[in-house]
Length: 106
Image (tube, rainbow, N blue to C red; front, side, top):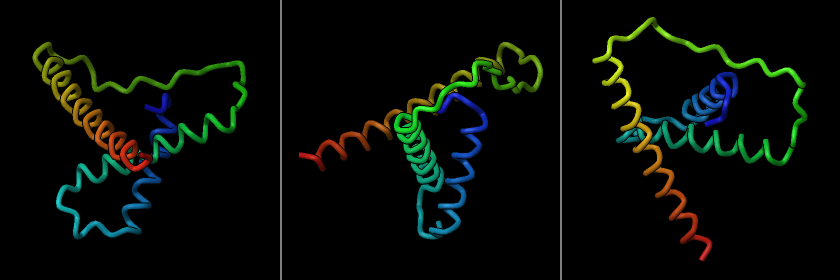
């Protein structure tokens, strides 16, 4: 979502700090709650990136690709299915948030 592993790590750490301060003992769906927090932190980072307009250094070093070795075709298919399901859950959550924001503005 953010385009770099460093920024993604920063977003997860920021979300962890928020969760540790808020106390999650009353949360029924902890996974969904954490996903929402991380998504909102990422969106805030993207918004602030648009406001600051940083100049690139000229040299782009891509993030390293982390892999656990070569996957077998069956494991690769299972991984692809789980990633697509996770993406659908995130997109559904974001669309619900966008709808509630739209209704609140009306």
